[in-house]
Image (cartoon, rainbow, N blue to C red; front, side, top):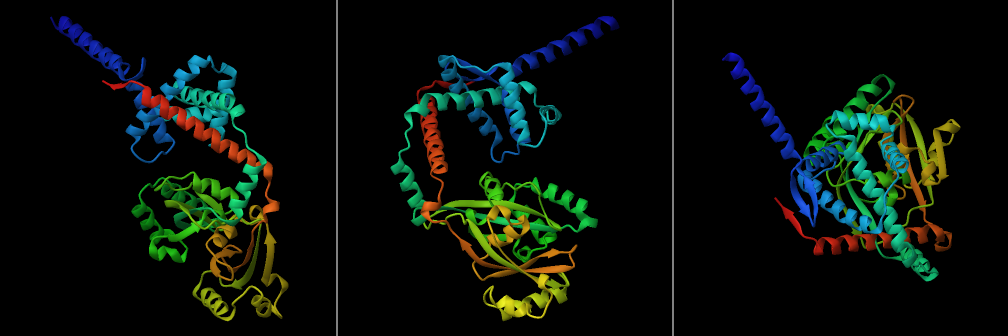
Length: 403
């Protein structure tokens, strides 16, 4: 009798498990005749979590999979598909964006419950769709010399610019505390709450802005170094950058908002700045010396008088392309107007305070713009608009049902 009861219990458990597994693969959404299963929704949501996508992940996963089905219907009609070799290469390229080998990236996904097939489908549809758009619409997109000239003129003399509203943290990280600072920065980079980030800024930031939770005013994104611009524009409100190592510190930025302003600001080709080095670092004595210097000078040229009779290395004035400026200096300069100064940075393991002054930003003349680069940018923008319009048409005519 006991054996019979045990067998029944095992059969009941097996049937229950099998039913649950089957349920995971039942369609929960249909897009025309294409099904989306509960398993796929769960997998896409898990992958978005790994990608640290902010917002409503349930809705994001649903919308993305519906869009994938719409794209796949077009790709099927066109007879487009990737070879296994090309797909593997595209997956490796995707993993490389996270500075990981493909096998390492797959291990990270697996540790978070994401199957390799989920990444494979995501990359396959994305890359094939991109190629389809280029092949189908590329020949139809014509960028004339007049289009290029108009874009250059607008960029130089009017139109609009992108401005970002950021929160900032710089954690002091002299060599003895570098590992601890990076660990703290990594933890903060996972935050998605503005109030939580601001609380951390008040607690750990070495900048004066810590008093207001690291809050900054609106800044044209072109003020930041080129390598940082792409990172900031890739954020969504609430997202935080990965830790950015700088000299004797680690920087973090959180996007609060982004807007298109009416007055255009052209990315500078050259930045003229001066660094005056003061003993004492961020001690009270060092900060008093910096404040005294700030009270005495109005322009960068005034610093030459202050440096008279001192060692030549006390004053360092440079005019450099933005990409050639050390990142910590470039980040500080981004918030300054001409002849404004800051003294937040240090050198010599924190023993020397950097009195940093922005002298001038040199913007390019219209004839200095690269026409080929502008042409490619316009082409990409038009292709993206055509692709978006196609998806909207497909969604409007599709029969999408939730079960």
